[in-house]
Image 1 (cartoon, helix red, strand yellow):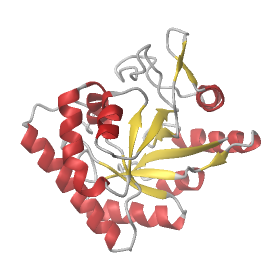
Image 2 (cartoon, rainbow, N blue to C red; image 1 turned 135 degrees about the vertical axis):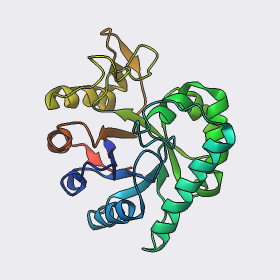
Image 3 (tube, one colour; image 1 turned 30 degrees about the vertical axis):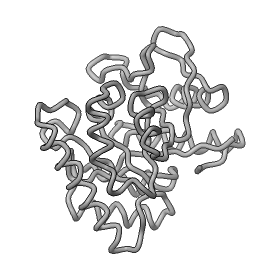
Image 4 (cartoon, one colour; image 1 turned 90 degrees about the horizontal axis):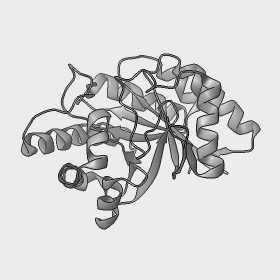
Amino acid sequence: MKIDINCDVGEGVANEYLLMPYISSCNIACGGHFGDVKTIDETIGLAIKNNVLIGAHPSFPDKENFGRKTMCISDLELQNSIEDQLDLFVSRMSLVNKKLHHVKPHGALYNLIAVNVTFAELFIKSIQKHIKDAFLYVPYNSIIEKIAINNNIKIKYEAFADRNYNEDLTLVCRSKENAIIINSEEVFQHIFLMIKSGEVKTISGYKKAIKADTICVHGDTKNAIEIVKKISERLKEDGVKFGF
């Protein structure tokens, strides 16, 4: 068995140097919900040092709410923002002769394009310039998955280590008490079921089919370091290799 472990980084938590040794790809905030040239460059440097694949993590342009609320802005404003974020990120990557490995949308944008055709099509349009030789991380059985495939975009299925799932495979809303999984052993059991059996246990206790090429741990989860360390150690013990 083989699995990629990814992490959202460059988001102001300043724990990247502790996370990087335990992950195989990363998603770097590129100015929408967080980030500027300094944080992007520093995080790219840490990823290179740790041999971690590098992706861009565009968002609604909403630093006030950390990109975790849907914004009421025009389609053109959103498209321009996503394009600007990726232009900035790719320009910083080019300075160190690195190519973009993937794009993974952040927060409310990620959740919205998973279920909304209009916004999924807008997102695909916004990333076309930079996605040709890169992957798009998408949730299994989502709207964005289908539209990406129809546009000949290479995808990697993503699942979440530290988040609970609803019956329809959407993530439990962060405002709910059981949205986030904190206990590292529970996190491991959560993802091992996905890797071993291709299933996820939902909050109602039922198991649903899921595909996962890459599994995300949020860098701002309060015990993210403990979680990635536990996942890395336990998966290696069970003979699971890292990467794609």
